[in-house]
Amino acid sequence: MKVSDLLGNRVHRTLLQKVMNKSLEELFLEPQVQLSAEQEAQFQTMLARYASGTPIAYLLGEQAFYGRSFLVNEDVLIPRPETEGLVERALKITADRVLELCTGSGVLAVTLAIEGREVSAVDISSRALEVARQNAKKHGVHVHFMEGDLFSKVQGKYDLIIANPPYIDSKELRKLDVFSQEPTVALDGGERGMEIIARILEEAPKFLTEGGILLLEIGWDQAEEVKEKASGYECVTIERDLFGRDRYVIARYGRKNAG
Image: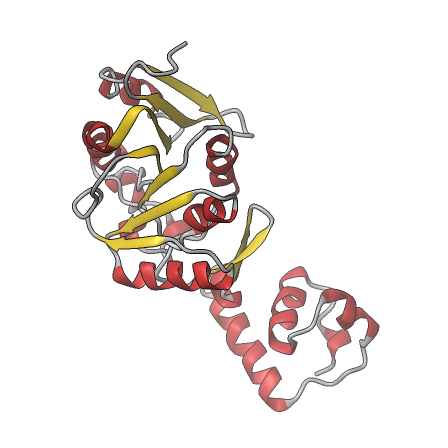
């Protein structure tokens, strides 16, 4: 099998780059190169896994997020483009100390640390935290990682609490094959997808500074219920993603900087 045999298909090209450890430009410059038996076997194995539903990001072991490459595997949710909107909003908020809940692969925590924030991050999964630690090391930043259920291990107060929590309805999740390869704990938000969100809204004020901000990603149909449950906050704003869907909650606690 030669490189040229595989360049006509997008998925084939992507897998070939991984197998041969070459850029797409290098592959096009060397179309007559023959794959070794080991490379061909690796390619066929990856292709079979893709055909059975394994996402490309898991096959490659990495995913782009906010202009950087992050390690991912089956223990973490694959970062979505809409989650980059959380970073964009977080960077507009004056916040020295940041806490991320449900950190998963750590893309939010690591990105904010790269941007100069002092970041702590929590996840209930020890295996997800291992991936997050690898990403912090990969990008040369320090993040204080904690294993626990939301705020169970958290101490002190933060200027910003940020999270992309599980927010898919349990019943709906069982119908969605697209998520079948990703960890359920990172997706299952319980009844109406609101169980984790509701807990965060209720518990966050104890860990926010006066005037601190809670920034969440939510499901497109959850905005009204979120606003009801966030009635104790000074100011609650719902913003839309690039597709025009309600996606981000910005809730200020206390009266500092109100208005």
